Image (cartoon, rainbow, N blue to C red; front, side, top):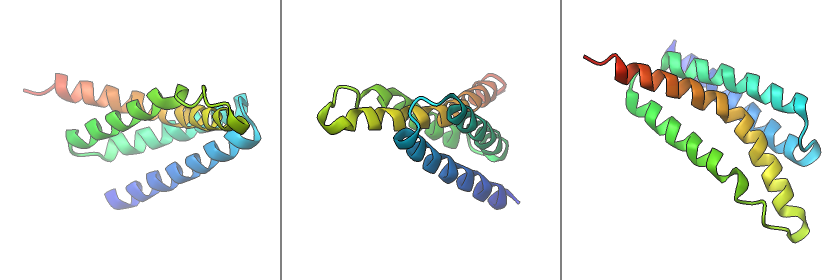
Length: 117
């Protein structure tokens, strides 16, 4: 059962990633698009946290999301052919997808660490 939910989470992540790229190119700074990505991220986060057994997996997830969220502004200075604008839009959409995942994983990690005996 755990593998089935892991597959569902992965499929939702792939859909969210595709939507982030499409939305970053076709609909930059669209509120509805961002909300759809946030809801997908919430579902991914809940599925991931409920079915993760090892705290190390949560730490890896948190580290990856922090790195991705931190680089959202890295492409803004690139102005050649609007590449920076597209890349920033895609990364902001991806951040909208991953921020709920990071929040849920952080809460789970803090609870797990705090409740250790």
